[in-house]
Length: 388
Ligand code: NAD
Ligand code: MG
Image (cartoon, rainbow, N blue to C red; front, top):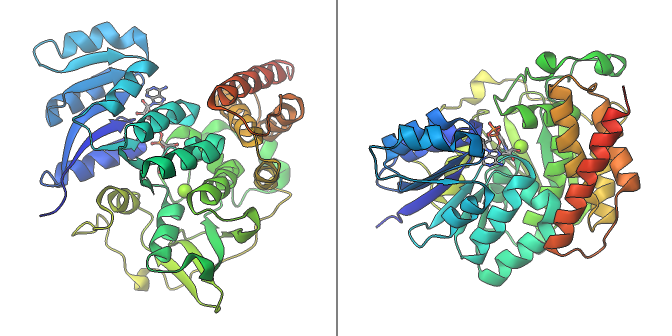
């Protein structure tokens, strides 16, 4: 009989969360939703709780606790609040799998807690691995926990690596659509508005990752994510621009063979692959035909237009807390850009500033990651204030 999973979904109201709910809804014989977490959209969270009959919900922002309680007063749903409650709902005995679709650093501790409790993890929250990939992967290995990537590139690589010997892999080739500003000249980037940067041609995603895609910070993070997930050296991870977003990534082998995974740009496929692995969904959400895409093109990344990619590689080489600092500064700067408090090009400037000034720890503990994250955020905030 097929395995049945009882799921805790972190980030149930977001882009990945909503698509995960589609999959759970379509396969009641495979999945039960036990817990759902969101930051502030309490009405949507209450709706999810009712539809799926979940046992518990967590609202991140305490201001919405009372209204959420009221909205669920006639149910048996347990209402919890705040980050400690998120760690609680991933750990309960009635959960087998945690789908982590939170944004940013907030995803790290819940992932670690889920590993500690031996839960299977479908991971969309790439920041978990960007910040503390060393600690996270070591913990997962020690507990025998599988981390199944939801990120489409990493899902593609995992699919290409199935049945292959690790020592035969030469390179991982991560594809990159180029984001919303692919056709905008470098000189014009400073004048881009949040509205313009949020128009991604291929993927409809949350605001933060859409901006990260426009700056290629996202691609840099995906290189770091791949380094940890697949235990490859930074030199073995390449990035190519592929505007059609049909080839989701590739693996090159020593004998010259290259395997690629193709499909429509629809996150339902990598999400269901992570949820059902090693099984697959019985139907496609959006069927794919090669004939609709007679032209697939590939080109090099313009490293001057997109300095964030090289910064991410530098952070990987420096190791320690460098990627954590990059992530923290980026989170603060992206929020400031979305609030029209800085320019798009200030995001990279903020990252550089934080990397120059933040404490560097070579072999950090999780507490040191927390401290460096807080310090880098403060550095970033002050740097952005100083821009005015
Ligand atoms: P989103 O902004 O659409 O959704 C984020 C969700 O997390 C929301 O439900 C929000 O309420 C919740 N959340 C955020 N911070 C929280 C906190 N502190 N406490 C409780 N809940 C909190 O984001 P998204 O686009 O779905 O992305 C989620 C993650 O998946 C990110 O790490 C992103 O990089 C990754 N990812 C997304 C896509 C995509 O297509 N959207 C693709 C690949 C990877
Ligand atoms: Mg991706």
